[in-house]
Amino acid sequence: MAHFDLLIIGGGSGNSILSPDFDDWNVALVERGPLGGTCLNVGCIPSKMLILPADRVVESSEAASIGVEISGVKADWPAIRDRVFGRIDPIVEDGTRYRQSQPNVTYYAGDARFTGDRRVTIDLNSGGSEEVSADRVVLAAGARPFIPAIPGLMSTPFHTSDTIMRIDRVPDRLAILGGGFIAAELGHVFAAMGSKVTVIQRGERMLRPEDDEISQRFTDVFANRVDLRLNSHPTRVRHSDGVFTIEVENSDGDADVVVADEFLITTGRQPNGGQLNVGATGVELDSDGYVVTDAELRTSASNVWALGDIRNPLQLKHLANLEARVVSHNLAHPEDLIAIDERVVPHGIFSHPQIGSAGLRERELIASGREYLVGRCEYGGVAYGWALEDTTGFAKILIDAKTKEILGIHVIGPQATTLMQQVVQAMTFGIPADRLVHEQIWCHPALPELIENAILDAL
Image 1 (cartoon, rainbow, N blue to C red):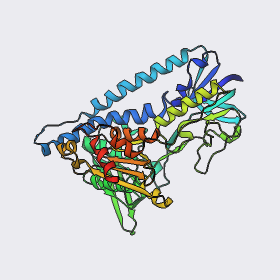
Image 2 (tube, rainbow, N blue to C red):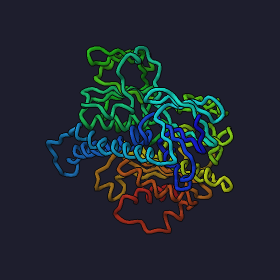
Image 3 (cartoon, helix red, strand yellow):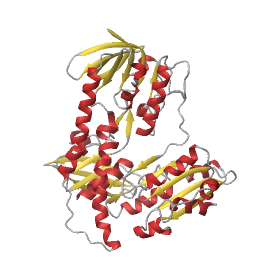
Image 4 (cartoon, one colour):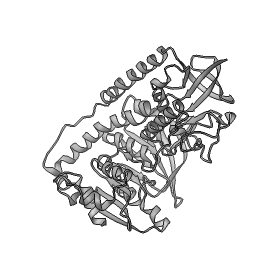
């Protein structure tokens, strides 16, 4: 049985742990899929590269509002797809070759499962298995799509976000189950590419984890582009002659049928800790299956650390990258541990309209009883938003009534993820709202005036 100084399970953000501090360590890296993990291969990177051309298509249809007629717009799906994966796949291949060439790194392409204390069996993709052990272990094995138990579904060729971005042609009719960010982003992509998109969502709104006003505004706007079946769930799925027949029931008990050429399941992602059998090495999982860690990202087992989607329900790449830096430092400097700072974690949803958000939502402040101020500004209320002819986007800011601490920022509209970042910076470094709005000069007529006016509205 091979023994290592460090065993890393997961080649996404876990792959970035290996700084020069580890050049003299004997390291094993296990990855069952392509190196780079979810973000590079099936998540953030390819989806955003697909969203960019989708944005251009939608913008061309909106151009008439500013006096520009654009005709003959055609989206070449194979060219768009090949641009994406023609860049990503060589990066994965080069990265894999690099890791395999390192004299101190043993790369295992396969599926790991714990059989004891810091001991795993790896079922190799090439066949056979190997058993290895290590002094230290990092769990970075991410998450996988959650597939609901719907009668008939498992006997059909349904898609998840792991597969649909590589399809050969845009379906004429696409059904999407779920109303979260994956449904919002990929629904935007395929609607722009020409699919008739039907979204089947159990709840009364899309993007329910967002602030309620943001969620409702997105739902209202998105319904203009897709067929939204809210308060509905599928009761049976069939597939015959290349066509999906999805029986749907709404909250009133009424039944309907959705017919589609492809069916995309976007009902969330579940962490892979259970698949790894981490209990065999003494690692605790919470009630949702996430690995439990302390602020230094140590698990309940000695010399076992965790990072990324396997431990964090937010499942954000930028957070996983920060976690990797913390784990890397703490492994190399056990006498000088650092903790992760997760006080302010921004996130973005790159649909149309775009959403950027950080901090508390208004419903959380209402539930807490905390006194707060709320400010809003519509895009059309500032000069650049007026020039855009935007009638749907707005910014919303939440501020402590006494201290003027910024508690939350929520933006829906063009460049929302960029606009919120200035507020994220203020929240992180403790700049109160009154100082942020009054002690800097805001560029006119630039779009950040949206944030300025939202703060002024609150104050």
